[in-house]
Image: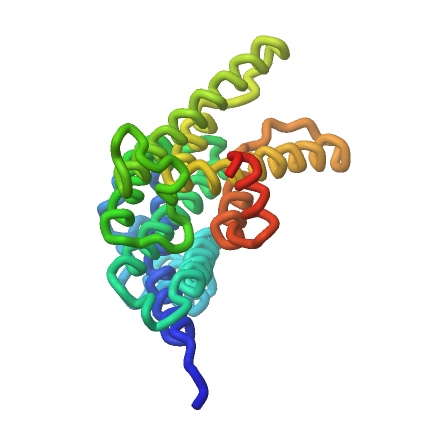
Length: 294
């Protein structure tokens, strides 16, 4: 008898859910820089006409309308279907990572998937806004830090000890506590250390170069990384983000001969999502364990 993997069932459902979430994220990436509320229904950015439900189906409606508003005929940005498709793919890949066996279809793993999808959603909005407007909204960085910390506590309380969690064994018996309080403490500490480290590095670089090299949005962003990812994955994401940001600068400065102020968000998002999806490969796992002295 051929064993059927749960991912065959779960991934399509996760992709559909992700596409729906992506529709909200696309709207958020447009409205947040304009300081607009996220609650009103979707409307055409050109004529303001409210979009009907049959014209608001993720990805498919944009393709059916050939990227134009049904009422005014003006083009609608391809950012909408791209964000929807990206969120759908990442939601499916996260589900594939989490639901390996049928025994994984429990409350703890579903909550873990929602937690991880929430983090990835923040990354998508952050990168989209930063690429287009050169700003990182507080809603996708510092305001999300408490949710990252509380999420680790909830996962620990539910007994989840699978992929992407802070193992309490990193600091057993810390301050007389064990289990999920330790995970929350480590997430909070990591967020604080990352924030302080990036702030100090930025201020030192500004002092010696006389340039504004690191914005406050970047400092708040790495704090959010620490809160959601913890010390191991957070450190890997931080290092890879710095490497990718440096590579981005080299390409523009040396290869393209252009001196631009480049956003940190997109390369950081690329690196962080890579760590989220592939951070359990042996090379990266041993690397992070070596860094923290395990």
